[in-house]
Length: 123
Image 1 (cartoon, helix red, strand yellow):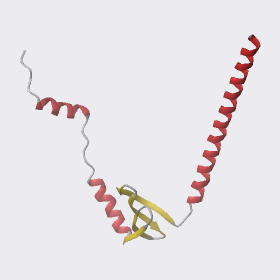
Image 2: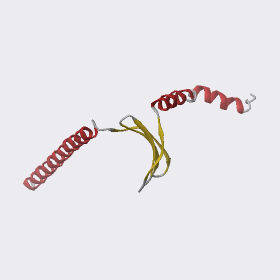
Image 3: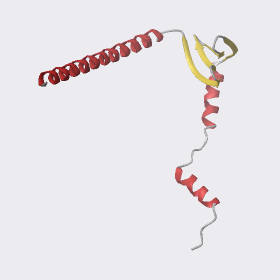
């Protein structure tokens, strides 16, 4: 009885070690593939500058191809050219975007506004 329990425990430890080894190899291969794909993407003439989602599976992207900026619509099965931008238009868009950032309120400010809406309790 004792030897069968010991044998079962050794089998459990062996299976656990094999599982951890497979996880480790999977992690290493995934990291290597990600680095390889990232290396393949760099040094190309096409760069995605900005992406905005407009619907499910539909995006608008600003891409830079060489010295030309293009605005494209990307759908599930199609890519359409919308317009071409100049470098000056891209820089003015980034300035306009920074000015339109909304002021965020702290939780304490929001809580005080909510408290003001409710009538105060009389003791």
